[in-house]
Each structure stands twice: as C-alpha cells, then as structure tokens.
Length: 221
Picture (cartoon, one colour):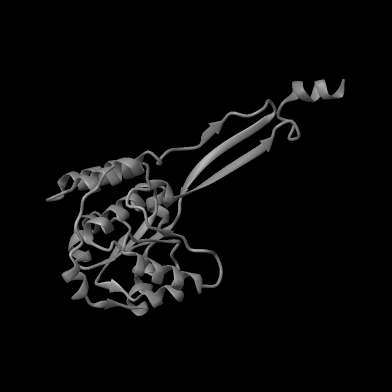
C-alpha cells in the first residue's frame, strides 16, 4: 500500500520530553491477559475506527491487514505419523512512537488487533486514543516525545515501533542494544502487521506417542 503522510516537525520540536518515570508506571498498569483472550477484538476495533472523526486510509488499512493474523491454530501438512500445528501469538506490549499521531495510531491498532497492548508516546497522544480509552482498551497514552535513553532501563515491553528519520532510529537501536536480557525488536515499517506477532510451531511424533496404531503395527512387522 502506498501511503502519503506529513510529519509536523514544528509540533515535534515543541513537544515535551517523556522520561522513564513517566513511562514505567504506564507499562506496569497494563494487563494484556483479558484482551488477548477476547474473541471479538477486530469487531470492537472496526467499530471504533469507523466512528473516528477524520479516520484515514492508513488507519483502516492498518486494522485490515492486522486482522488477517487474528486466527486460531492452523494444522500444517506433514508426513504420516507427525502432527504440525502453527499458532500465532501477540508479541506483547509495544511502545508506539509514531513519530506522528497518525503513524502511532496505526501502530496501536496493529498491536491491539493481534491481541497485544500498547503505550502510545507522541504529541497529542491522549486525544488520539480517547475513543480507545473510553471502551477500556488496553492502551496507555503519554503526550510528548520519549527520552530515548529511557529504553535502556524500561521494563515490561516487547517491541518498539517507530517510522522516524534514520538519525532517530539509530539512537533507538543504540539504546536497545545496551539492554541486558532478551533482544527487543524495532519495528520501522509503516505496513508490517507480521512484525507484531510471534509464531510458534509444535511438531509431535504421533507414532512415538502411540497415537497411530496402524503405523506401530507396521513397524513391528
């Protein structure tokens, strides 16, 4: 999808800084369990997006593409005597950094659509997500720009989404690289719903488990 959007550089320059002490309480408050188990996430989000004043093609496309990844277990083909099952799971809590409101909202919608939770940090974040907050969606909003050094010590998030300029993206990568523990991915694509999920593939040898008696009988001949 071709997208056309303009980032308000003046608004970015005039935005206040959002620090570690602002973000960590928001991360700690979010509980993804109930939302991940919801069976009508896409319907709820579609209703909200449809009601948004000035809803853009980017927001609608963000939700449509993400909804394609909201499904149950898939049985994959495999050899006789082997079970292969693919499941998709939300990546977790995503810091949505825009850098402008439209991009950040698209990131939030993709996160929510696949069962994740989001913290939105951009100028005018609270007014942007007000319709989501009114319906108790698992999202938090902070007005301003994140102090990128905070990424070195914040906890409780699984990914960062930002389509900012290369200089800003480099600073984000450097902050994430200094962290201990698991690697935190940076999602830079404007349209990439697959980046908001993780795949799990379970392969079971059903013959060894005694699940296919005919194969076991053949093996004993």
